[in-house]
Image 1 (cartoon, helix red, strand yellow):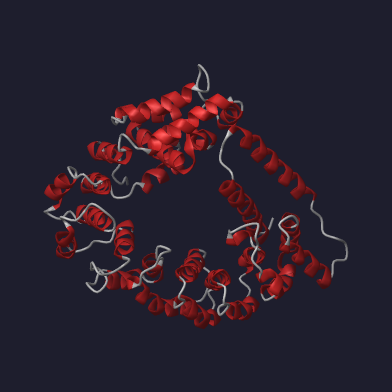
Image 2 (image 1 turned 30 degrees about the vertical axis):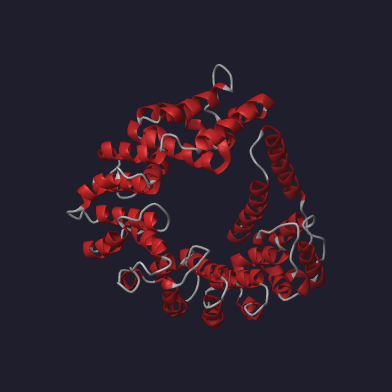
Amino acid sequence: MSTSKLILTVISLVIFLVGFFVLKTFRKSRFSQFIISLEERERLRQQVRLPPNLDEQGIREIVAKLLSAEDAFLATEQIKLLGERAVPALVEAILNPRFLEKDKSSKLLALTPLGRVLLLLEPFAPQTAIQPLSVLGSHPDAIVRKAAAGALGKIADEACIAPLNLALSDSDDYVRSYAMLGIQRAKKENRGSTNFFEAMFDPIVPLLKREDKSLSKAPETLLMLNRDRAIQVMTDVCCLNLDNPILPQVLYTLNDSEVIIREEMLQELMEPISTKLESYPNDRIYGLCLTSLARARHPSTESTIQNALKHTNKQIVESAAEALAISKGVSKMRRLFQRNSDWGFEQLTEPEKIVLSIYEFEGEVNNGGFSQYFFNSSGDHAETASRGLKEIGASQTAAMLDNAMQLFGRSGPSADRETRTAQLDKLSSKAEKQLGLLDNEFYKDPDRLSVKMWLYIALNSEFFRDRQ
């Protein structure tokens, strides 16, 4: 299978999964439907064939089927088989008024007719699409402008510079964000010209201080384009000040990229708000400054962290616990996930297993409840998570997990995902209801789970520092 066809296969699956997971929850009656739907689609995929002697008009007719949600799956599979032969017809569809109509069946861009066309074009990044996409940059519908901005960013050709400058100055926050997400995608995939990326830096700089309800992508995009230059701009007092409406995003991005910020700058941010930490954004800003202080090993860090651990604001306490771990040399938790990927769960140390299993448990339940946790591969480590929750002192949360596990019978949920999925599908309505009640109890976070996990990491920091 060619790279393009492989990418398109993945795109098709993502389109289906996104639509499914947004509309469904993982409950008993849904599991059978989910599995059957996957199996049915795979069966249909294997049967897809192209009509014999297919000409350009025939290809246009297949592309036209993307207009219908019912026909889109089959059409997508046929277009994947066509590969680059379908590109001209797909490009023609960009300005077709029918493809620009809002799809009432879905609010997701990827599932609209235009969204389907652009996803199928993405692997090819055709220059022929630049002109019609540029036209859409002035469309009155922000959803259309958003789609065009993202697609132009992914093509990343010099001809995209002018229309993307327009997108980056758009009045709609999400149009600007999609433009930057497209640029990021092109950069990650080593697609596009050097001149294009150099030209994108300056238009994004003003967005470092512009209010953005979409959670601005400006800080991370600038770091991807030119790290040294971005750090210089982002650590300047013109950007790091309390009047900046997106200061939390800037601080978060600098933290995530392990950029060292001078202590005096952090203190200038912290001191004016130190007595006003009961709500956002002050609690978020102060917490991020705590982790920045810890990362730089500033002399004032220890006493500041200890005081913050006694605060009544949950955000402040969580940030202080994380800062304590950072101050002990734990720089990046995602490196634990990399070790798990490289070595396998069983090769991790016991403290690593505890933290990883709890982290996965917390994330899955917060995202979709206990049912989702047991359905996904994270549920393979339920026994470890239960043991770990008791180890870190999260007794109430441990009791919730134990109660959920008991619903699977005397032997509990299987550590084998396939077997466990079958168990989950057979749970009674009463058991389902009990899982729902446990979800609600979990969301109250009686143990302040993140705090206890970070304190455990700090106490066992030798297991979480970077390894050679």
